[in-house]
Length: 150
Image 1 (cartoon, rainbow, N blue to C red):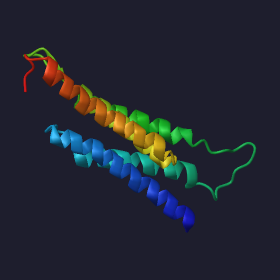
Image 2 (cartoon, rainbow, N blue to C red):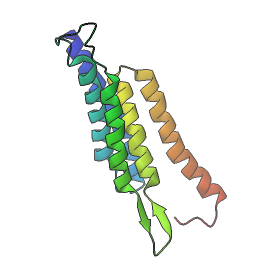
Image 3 (cartoon, rainbow, N blue to C red):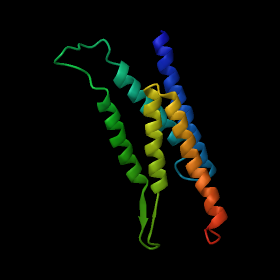
Image 4 (tube, rainbow, N blue to C red):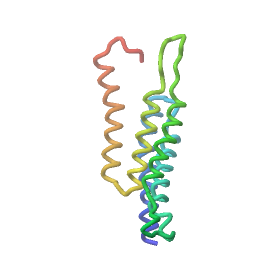
C-alpha cells in the first residue's frame, strides 16, 4: 500500500508540472494548452510507473528480464508523432508554425517520465527551465524587438 501511494504521488506530481507548462501555453492563447500538457505528463508518468513496477510479479530469470526503458522509448516515439501533427507549413505565408508546441509536448512527456521514475527535483527544475524559457524569452523579445507582431 505504501508503494502504491508513492507511485500515485509520482503521477499526481507529473500532472501538476505538466499542467503548469500547459497554463503558460493557455495564457499565451496557444491551441495546445493546459489539458493536453496535463494529460501528456500524466500519461508519460503512468507509462513509466507501469513499465517499472507493473510487472514485478512476472517471471524474471537470467534469460528473461524486463527492460523498463523500452516503454519510455515508445513514449518518446508516440509524442514525436503527436508533436509532428502540430507543425504546420502555411505555403501562402511561407511560415512554419507549431514548432514550440511540438517541443513543449516533447519536454512535457520527458517531465512526466522523470516524475514516473521518482526524479522529483529533476522534473521540477526542468519545468522551471521550460517556463523560464517560454516566458523569459518572450519578455526579452518584447523588449528588444520593436517590430515583433503582438
